Image 1 (spheres, rainbow, N blue to C red):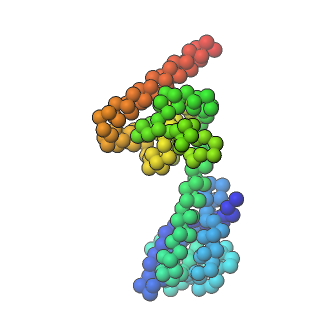
Image 2 (spheres, rainbow, N blue to C red):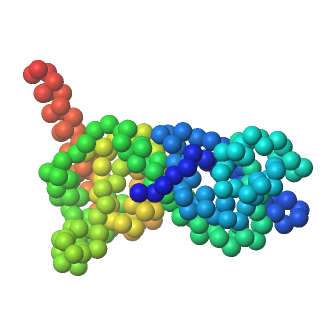
Image 3 (cartoon, helix red, strand yellow):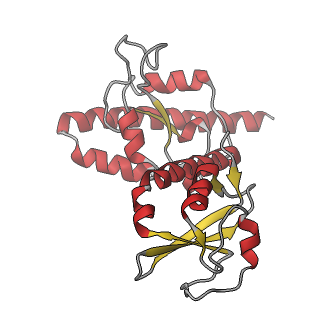
Amino acid sequence: MVRRYPYERLGDQVFSDGMIGCRFQRVDLNARFGISDELRQFFTQHGRCARCNGTLEDWSIHEACKAGARRFFQSSDLEVLLPLDTFHVHWKVRVRETRRRTSFHRALKSKAAPGSRTAEQIRTLLALQERRCYYCYRSLEGPGGAVNGPGEPTSCHEDHYVSLHHGGSHFISNIVLACVSCNSRKSDLHGDDFVREALEQATLVRRRQLLRIHRNRAAHACRLVVEVVVDAGDD
């Protein structure tokens, strides 16, 4: 479990004397990631309050500091000053922080998104896609011939066609099966945009193969909708 603190970095401002100022605002940890213990320790160790030049053992007391000689473009709850060289040298700390924050907010959106799917529905989808990636038609089978077989590297991801970031659901109608590479490259793109790009780059034979599994999935989705409507009518 990552320990978090109720501050979020707003932006940075470089000064002519080789220093960089980082602005922070206080946030609600129920809705925002804040900052990790690693990032807080980095700024505490290498930075000082840009307003009073004091050390940062307790960040909260510096929220009351009056503005110092350095002028920032925008106001914030806390301003931290540190050498620009130090800031750049420790770039990996910021990369890890970005990953943690992205993962946190994705989990929030996933929790709030409606719907669910079953293992049986995923098996049906796998058959409809001919055990192939929805975007590139690469086989989803691992070295042993199984899909995500025990003891084998992950070969198949369940991808949200309309990403959770854009309001997608967990219903099976919004799920496609993709290889690890395609799912990583698609990220939060809408499925329509990624499919369009994939079809443009595919050979004629590969395009026909992709369109076939796309039609299979679309036809199955229509059948599911009809079943839901019929069931609702029976009730």
